Length: 336
Image (cartoon, rainbow, N blue to C red):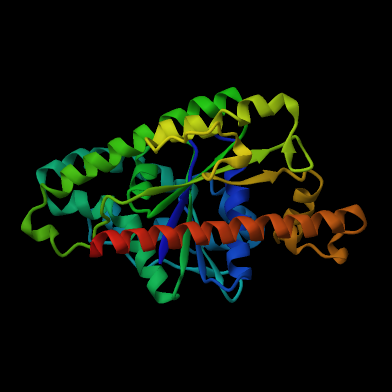
């Protein structure tokens, strides 16, 4: 199981839509995928599910919040999470609007971890352990986690539980400023978590806790104005600054050559917005690349659907390749 969090501390960059389409494509390519909604806005759950089904899940207490019910109240540990099948290879751990209520408690117990006691570690690792249990039950290959656009305690718990990070970004000044902060903040969280792990008392040793391991896979440039797979001129000046800002943010090795987004190895893809197709896909409750003529994808729309399929297949294969390269490098390092 490989866990990937899609995160940007700036909202409105197309993060949830990117995760939704990538999860579907991974399943299309034969992988078993669990999509996890840890954003209290529940946008991912609402994209995956028809309104009536999502309401029923919430009313039946089958969201992530129910799996936290006992530990949140200090009445025990995590519960087994309900998992909603989307198709034979794609599953959803539904989110909950009330998940935000645990934010303050997670923040408080983060500092209490320094005491070494059981409960703070159990709470901080709750998402990690819930997801790991669900992944084992459904033989999941990849977990995709959606989180909100902030540096809050929920996101910290998610990110320290993840193997990899993908940063969706847009080509504008505010995205560049936001991107410059992400790496530094995550690095500080990882260091703080490592310090806390060193304070653990004996009764915490049975807890399955995440290590300090998250690795940035790269960024996806979400572009509203593109022509022939290139950003329009108004955005290109910002797009070409992203490679340098991304490397600086995550303290990655710099390149000797002048990089732009289209020759940067960390640029996983340039994804178009497809304004006219997204509403059609949402109405059909399927990714854009799965739209059929019966859904309204005819004429130019039909050809655009094929292009979207190719774009997301290319992106998904690149993500898989990067992960395998990372695993191989770590294996070689441990054997050295």
